[in-house]
Image: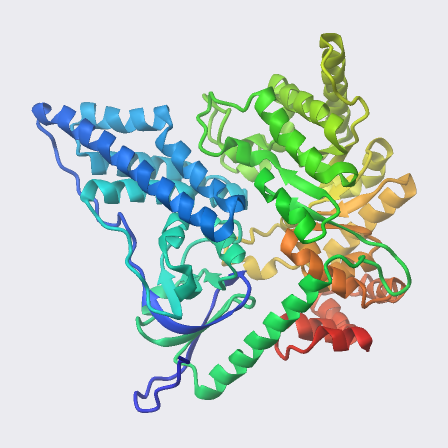
Length: 602
């Protein structure tokens, strides 16, 4: 059944634009979801009631654990084991002795009911996550909220959501991952939320399921339940009460998009080579070892960036991952990549919110003691990670990636600690590789300015465009008041990338872009024009970027980008690229989608 415009209702078509976090088009009807745990009351207990309340909490935790195990089993059947780790993190929270004991202590000594104790602890944890500037780790607060809301619902005796009607576009303030796992995903054609981001687990699941999703709709309360609607997860658009003609247009785009992606996926094994014979290496950015099965599926040439922060999820400050635990993870990655290799980014300690017991909360952690700076102070912990990496290098090609480097001294000190770790392993008779490449992430302006100095002592560069754009332009892209200034095609950024690539070329070391620019077709063409020959991105985008690469001439791209480097504004750069590369921009924006094969033939 297809939604149609009700001409007798006098309802005008409305549009809202947010952030598209899962591409695709969904056409259906609005179903609103109320948040769990939104009404929690505080009761004062009599001393005689305390142990009964603690027992009630324990029973609710056990029931919640069983519920999550059932949801995990359902998620494995739907998506396979690759994404069931999300529920593992939730289960670990329920088993966190320190967390549970804090709730029990509040019940016993504050004489409060279990629901209020859970809310108090949740609020404290979420306040800590709110201070974290890293987008990925900040989004992990939604997992804490999910588990604690589920526990509160269990204490109140709430029931899980019932079945949804077909062609549901689900609207809520928060779309929590375990709620999604409980839903009949065959009925859901779109997700809309006020809160969330690209790296939230709900967004990850939505992309895996192929469900279009848009977040950042502040007026979500104005979205009427039961209304016909269209969601465009690529452009971040929600249309309410669409006209018949609008519905037909989006149905056509939906059909064309499905044909396009099927066509490209069937060609994923073809090489990423430009028309004039320039080979481009395409690697995958992944967050968890379970994603290794995507490498072959999307024909990735190894892993460009593995973020190790996930090892800290749901951990107390005094429970850091051991060398053996890290070794087992890194070995799995090395074995999966073989000679294609894996770049392992070392911990960004300040972003995790752990291993900092007793330290003062930083006013601006994005500019504080984080990444390589913290690692060089916590040298024993840093050495443990490097030992695990050196051991894993026996099973495949492994590279060490140092984040947020801004001085040559940091690189030299890190290299010295790596050498010490290798010497220790040799003395202990532990198998390892001595000559593991070590490189720096270029993601702060200082690193760009001394790129020639860093290149002389680095084995490679990993260009992190996400942070580089924010630091270079002084823009927090999560701040809606200034997000319009976050421009990947700003002339300053193009010149910074060119300076970095030139320094790497002069020193004869490789440079790889691992930020989000690599997965955007237009930006990928710009990067190739700037001389980048290796791109790393989310695995599912690789077939698409490959097909685009096979349609272009690298020399022509270089000429266009050379002209762009002399322009003075982002608008001028965009106008030039739109003029020169209109077919690619037209197809990617999906304004008038067409068969990609026709573009290739042209």
